[in-house]
Every structure is written in C-alpha cells, then in structure tokens.
Length: 204
Image 1 (cartoon, helix red, strand yellow):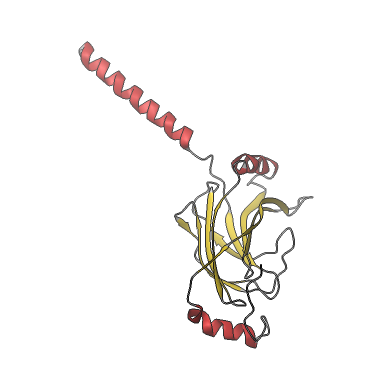
Image 2 (tube, helix red, strand yellow):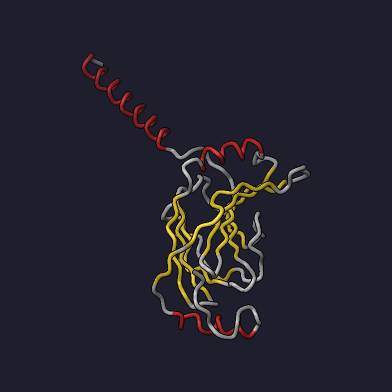
C-alpha cells in the first residue's frame, strides 16, 4: 500500500473517530429504565387526554384520567405505560379536554435545564437494580399539569417510595375544540356524580 493510500485511510479513520465523539457529546445521557404513569385530580375534575408527547415524537397516547384522586404532593398513582427507550425527556406536550368546563387545554413545556443532572443523582441514590423508576405526569380538568419522578423499591427500602419533583405545577392554555365529541362521556360523568350537573366556567 503506497503512502498516499495510507494517508487517505488514516484520514478516514480520524473522521470516523471525530463523528463518534460528536455523537457521544450530543447524546442526552445514559439510558434510564423507567415507565410513564399518567394520572389526574383533584376530585371532581376529570379530563380526557387527547395527546401526550415527549420530545415531540414519543407519543404516550391518551384517555380518561382522574377526577377521583387528590392533588396532593407527591401525587397519587395512575395508569402505567412501559417505555421502549430510556433517555430523559427534555420537552413535554399535552392536549386535554375538561368534562367539567367543556374546555380544551394545551401545553408546550420545556423541562428545567438541570433535570438530567438531578436525574443522574437520583439514579445513583436509587439504582435501577433496586428500584423501579417512573415518570409521573398528572393532568387536571382545571387546566393544570405537574411532573414528578418516582422510585419504588423492588425489595425493602427505608425511603420507599422516593419522589423527585420535576415540574411542581404548570398551567395549560385554553384552545379551540368541539366539546360535542365528548358529550356521551361527559353525560356519564354527570350521572355518576363526578362533576356538577351543569357546565361551569373555567377557573381563572
């Protein structure tokens, strides 16, 4: 192999190495095994979540939530979705309908810049070998959203469960929508006594 070809091969190897290093630098961090828990509350504020996305593309879907839980801190449990990936999300998007006020809400939320750093520390203190981790997103029919992280011990732990607040509370923006699409479900909520018999104006 002549010197020109050797030089060319070395050049290509350096380019490949630089590309790999650049990929590592842009990586949001090591994989973190966790599930997603969606819930609601407080009592009397059920909602239907139309869409819940992380980083713009990981769609958790939606469905009926809450209305019979509390809005305490830390939050109650909820429906569990198993995640196929383990990076910590940087953004959250949600759109939901309030059965009580017949209004739609939407929120585009960037998680705090120190979320990844805090999660690294939380996982060191609660390793995945001993704890089951979950990202908890709770949405209320009065327009609020909150995000916590939870670690549940697989065996016996003194601090089971452990919680870490990510977004203690955020408020969605009212958007246009057709409440008649949820007329049957709203009527069921009224019949069951979970919301007042007549719509109420959205809370300020």
